[in-house]
Amino acid sequence: MPIVAAGAAKRRQLRRTRVFPDPAKEGREVMSDRDAKPFAQVRLAVGALFVRGEDVLLVHSVDRCGWDIPGGIVGPGESPAAACRRAIGEELGLDRPPQRLLVHDWTRKPAGDEIRYIFDCGELGDESALQLRESELDRWQLVRVDTVDTLVGPESARRIWQGFRARMEGHAVYLEHGEPALRYPDTAPSWLDRQPDRDRHLG
Image (cartoon, rainbow, N blue to C red; front, side, top):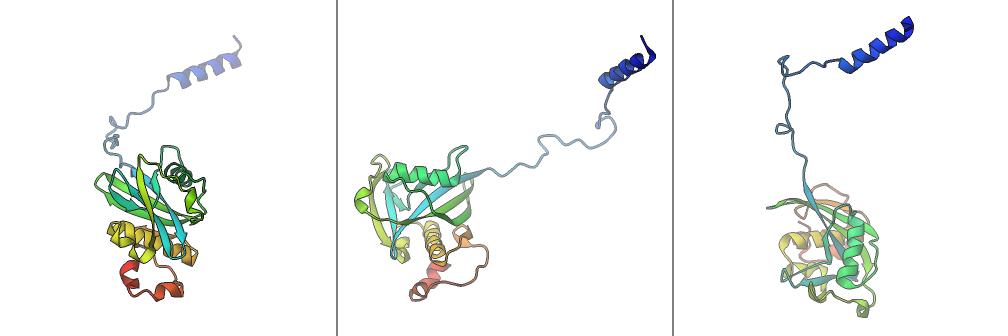
């Protein structure tokens, strides 16, 4: 065998048999899977805000026996916007793509962290087009945005109110447990300022 070829073969053999140092044997700290910091596992949910003037659309759930805006849970590999459009079709029988993001709300639940999005879905339009999924919903109602807390829980009411306000002001908001967690310019329209209980709703 030529000298050059023999040298190349020897180098390949050395690379194949090379032994890498064991950190444990050298006294270095070894991080196990048990020691690694876990990533946050977050459930995603979406809501669709339909409006008519100062009213918002609420639907009544058969399973939960309560009111909320239409929406649902984001499926694996599904984007929040796609999940919102799917939920609108399944719950209301409408093919209505969301127009823009209004709310990103982080909250901690007993089962873990959760992020809830609210999308602006525009004016409700023709009510006769609504076809509720009877296995999940039994009725709907248009409710003045400043009275939604009479039908839904406090956190959901704050989130809906903030979504309506974001729609009026033209920008999305970041919330935690339904409360603003960042400061935004106070550009609320005069309609909000005229509400006698404005501060109670805005938090």
